[in-house]
Length: 321
Image (cartoon, rainbow, N blue to C red; front, side, top):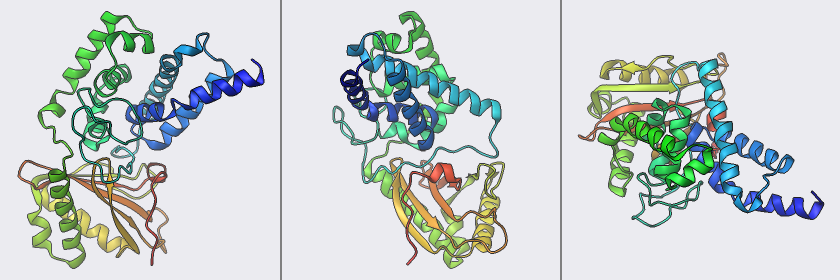
């Protein structure tokens, strides 16, 4: 391939970067993994380009999905220390768009599928995908998020159309629990989530235990993702009293944050906090994202804390005053 052809191919490949990043992020749930996978896909495309460059997207999709499946298998094989949570993604002040309107999110594609683009980067959706095999995950995302036809999925993943239908059916069955509890990121739901999160953290900072307790469901669950890098609960913490005790101890151990900023992450409100460097324990992280999931009654059913550097690498951190 001469230089002109190579430059033309590189430009053609870059036109699909947004879509590939969105697909890889949804496949792996980690922004840093998505970056690595897209770069490796591009490297392979330039090193050994497809014969038919006019049909580039299906080829790139197949390479990216295969790389993502390898990443998921390696993650499962190596194990993960403590609860696994997706890496936060800054989605700005977006809400669920009306049908037919494309959301301005990493990933491109169509919102005509079963799940809109904004919903499909929510923590609830990404955690639900953990119940799917890598192949089921790829088929579901292409069919129900990016609105691929059965034929297009078959071409992109090198599968027969009957096999695509079988895998898709099983993937949807595995998502049934998510579908039943589905809460779309509308403005109203975003406002309720923000009020609950900020109310809970504010009550902790002021020592108002009763106010903090009133915002928690009796069966609330706290998940802390330290990834073995930072000190965090290595099992889910269940129940109102235990969760409240956990967060009170965290506040005592860390002290007040040096900078806090509310942010819209993965379609819902979150808080990004920076803490002073620890003087004694290097396993106490200095950066954290805290977010919540709400039940039907508006109480907090899940509290998520993400501390791992790799999970937070793509976020802009607030600067202490």
